[in-house]
Length: 92
Ligand SMILES: [Zn+2]
Picture (tube, rainbow, N blue to C red):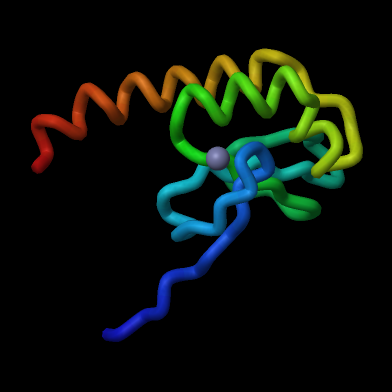
């Protein structure tokens, strides 16, 4: 199955890269800001600490989603980042 990569823009550094290499943050109509699933406006962000921190400092997620974003969203993403770094070296 040949599939073209889905490209999305990081809200922090504005680079356009493969969606699979980005974190997705969605503002769900009912649940508010969620990191998996959800229906509504979405923002994408690179899976690196610089972009996460920068996005937080410049309120990129808030602006992209047009709503308040709690800092724990960033913390959860940083957590995932650390985990994927750990398993990444083993997986390949
Ligand atoms: Zn980025």
